[in-house]
Image 1: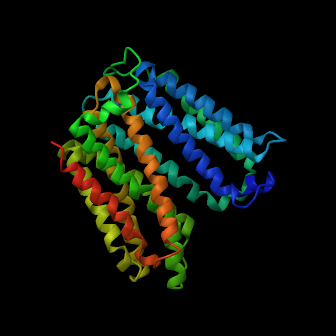
Image 2: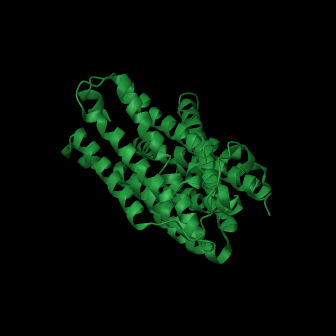
Image 3: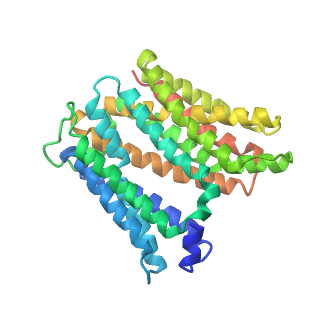
Length: 358
């Protein structure tokens, strides 16, 4: 991003606009896919493939010369828009293959997402080895490769029940189911905490290092704290087969909520204890994500499963933008060490919502 801003002669504040344009593109895309029930009416592997191709195309267009800031914003928006045909649709594809064991399947899928989220922190020190143009080429090539693999080797699952006609009111009707609504609200509470935690992990490490005059490899520890959550998803999926997705999700929500509440004390602890605390928090904050998606999928109408997952994903991602902005604002008006108490609102709401389901 910084190289892109320098090479295109953009203002320093363009960074936030470029990031937000991808987020709003994703939200718009999920609303579009959900409203037209695309993942349910069409072959989801084909939807995934076409979305990957178009996302890669709009991603790489930025490298062309004579492109202005408005064009860059539009291209980032369109890239985010077609990401909506990848992640939620990927969960739809997984749910079509597993009538039983969906919790484990989605745990593997979300584990891959977590590793992808953490990976940039690991390569942060090597970013100077590549020009920004090659980064765009490589990510687009990977997107095309991933989409092609899905299209060629992942056929419609045996439990897929395609929607036969357009249902424009589907995105409003899905929440009438009590258990679906409880699982969705649990997911929304989880999302209030998740991305704010991920976004501020490097900032927490930096604050602790400065406060206690400690040397911390921030990129490496950020990768470990976030990335090991992928391993947590793996184990969470296995545990869900024995104890049930709802029970494990409740334990994880309670654990991450407790982490929020004790975070002020942890900023006063020794370095080794602080790092262990963040590692545990990094585990607890993500284990419930695939399990909550499993509950959403299980309680959705089979003919609207893709649409249901997409709209819940859309609303959950919208909540992440709000929570990140709230934390960013509160950083300027309150003691940093008490900042993350605000994130406990999400897990508390999630636990109370899940307890209302059957």
